[in-house]
Amino acid sequence: MRVWVYIDGFNLYNGIVKKTRGKWLDLLGFSRALLPQDGIERIKYFTARVQARENDPNQVYRQLAYWRALRTIPCLEIIQGHFLTQKKWMPLAASVDDIRGRMERGQEVLGQRPKMVEVYRSEEKGTDVNLATHLVHDAHLGQFEGAVIISNDSDLCEAVRIVKGELKRTVGVLTPHPESPSVELKKAASFFRSIHPGKVITCQFPDTLTDSKGPFSKPREW
Image (cartoon, rainbow, N blue to C red; front, side, top):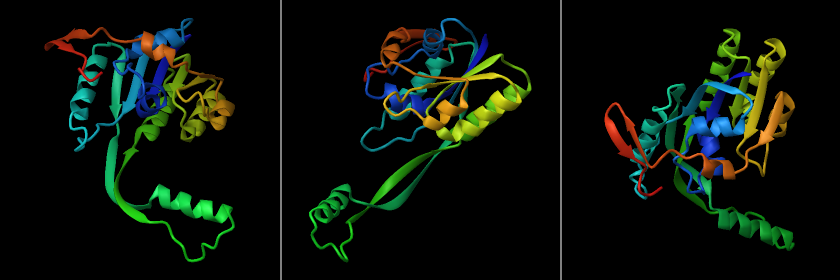
């Protein structure tokens, strides 16, 4: 089939990339390895610009280097959402576990409340909506014979159902969360498979690439 691939960047990263040495991932080679029988015509990569943190100020520069590498792929487009960071009070896990443990032992916990801590919480906004919108819009325009989504986000189910059921297009889902695959996405998709983590390691960019600005290299931390 003529296939367009829609990648939920952070879902992929947190699922099978984050804990590996495979962060310099060639998404075209990766897509071809996952779909060897199909022609990959276009890749849409949905992500958001990260923010510098005190414990990791260089993560912004690593991401920009990776985006630069992705832009050497002619058929790939980066579509950005955004992060919303705000302060929130949340229960301390240890105190919640302590109360739960005492309840299980039959001890009195009336009036006991977990300790609260104020944290910075970053939430990615727009990725799932952007992906769903592009998927349905492209299907209406007849851009592809088949679409493949790399994500495990069940919020995409309705878009998958519309494209598959109303527009009669094949929509497959490849989940980067093999240990907890989405049951809802599996029901909605034309086909559903888990991605083996080994695919990440074997589909890396060369350590040094060249674009219109000249040569550049994989971040040293990777």
